[in-house]
Amino acid sequence: MDPVRTCIGCRARAPRSSLMRVVLRDSQVVTDVSAVLPGRGAWLHPTLECFHLADRRRAFARALKAVGPVDPSEVENRLNGTVIPHE
Image 1 (cartoon, rainbow, N blue to C red):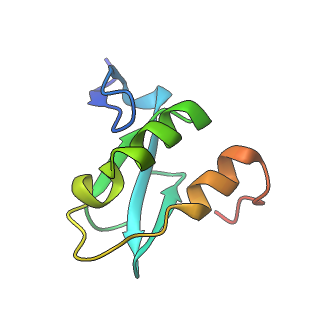
Image 2: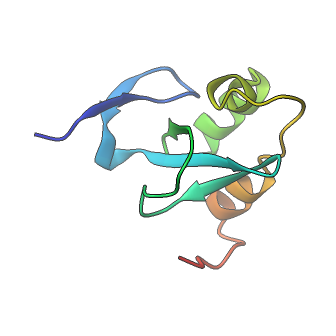
């Protein structure tokens, strides 16, 4: 059975396989495609709607326990299809 995680955007619980993991790298929120990068991760539905909810609520910084502002633009670009996967 797939573990259940909570989306930081819509706050709905969903199977881990249907969510995207994000981690913090030097104040930059990046997607963890294979879900193996070290550090604290947060889970997000791979939709622009959930991304915008999380961004508006400042959920990235809170969920990742960031000190200072974070830049989630890489995640937004990936969801828009403007980033070629590098993993």
